[in-house]
Length: 126
Image (cartoon, rainbow, N blue to C red; front, side, top):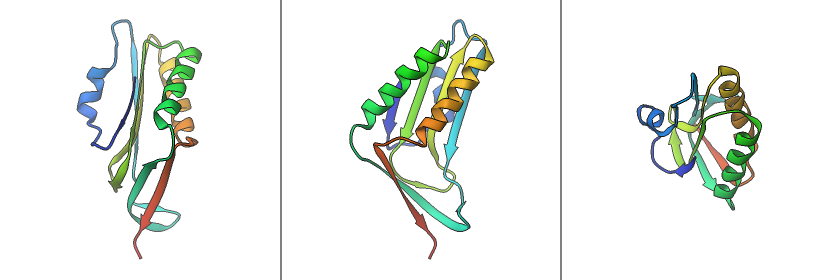
């Protein structure tokens, strides 16, 4: 499942979104806005969609499901202006074994960073 949203990602609710009937491992990775980037104090980040972000995320989900033996996948990306500490994205997987769940999340995180259809503007103090 994929989701693109301008609303907060609530960690308490995402667990219930994953199928997990046959899973022995569930992994969640949340990327958050950090307070400093390259030695500068960050005020916020602004994420804008540039093109077919939904299609790109659907392709990512399909690729991950083909490669990793998991029961379910959940990928969420925030758009809009986010403050320090806000959740930017979520990669989650449920699987019978931890290696698949961790591996899928690691690959999803790496590929989130390389997405073509989302643009990040950093707003710094000064």
